[in-house]
Length: 241
Image 1 (cartoon, helix red, strand yellow):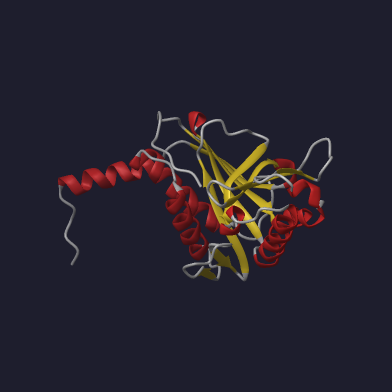
Image 2: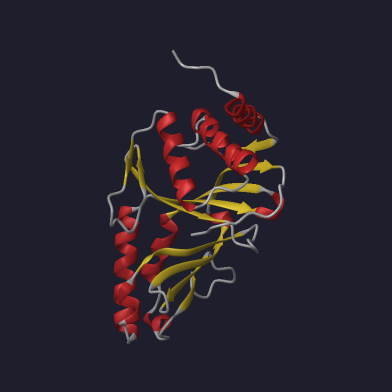
C-alpha cells in the first residue's frame, strides 16, 4: 500500500498541478508525422513543469530527453544514437533527426542560427581552397545522406515564447554547387545560394572551434511545427547549442 503524502510532499504535488495548469497558448501551424496530439500533450507538460514549477527553460539535454519521451508516449518507434554519432541524435520511425536548441539573446524571428551543426577537426588543418572544398562537400554529402531533418527548439526568453522548427536537410544539398573560389579564405563564410539577393543560409567553417556553423537560415524554407506562448517569469540561466 502506497502511503499518503505528508504535508511537504502534498505541497510539492499541489505546486506541480498548478504548474501543469499554467497559461499556455499552443499552435501547430502544419501537419507533422511526429507532432501528433499525444506527442504535443507530453511535450507541453514538460514545458510547463520546467517553466512554472522548476523556473528554468528546456536546455539542450532536457530538450532531447523531452522530445524522446514525447515520441515514445505517442507510440513512435524510437532509437537513440550511439555514443560518438556526430550527425544525429534520435531515430523516429526510421527517420534520423538532429535535435538542436537555442535560447540565445537576440534571436531573430525570421532567421535561424545553428552554432554547431557538427564538429569537423579537419577545418584547422586545411590550408588550400581545393582541400577545403573537397572536405566540406564530402561532409555535407554524408550529412544529407544520413540525416532526414534538423529540429530546433527556440526560446524567445523575454516573451517566454517557444518555437519548434524543422529544417529540411535538403536545403543543405546546395553546398555541392558552391564554387571553389568561395573556399579561398581560411575560415570562409559563404552565403548560399551564392549571388542570390536573399540567401537561404550562410555556411561558416569555424577554425577556432573546428566546427561547422549555419547562420541566417531563412525560416520561410523551414516548417514551424508548433509554438507555445507561456507567461513570462523573468530571466533564466539559459543554455544553447
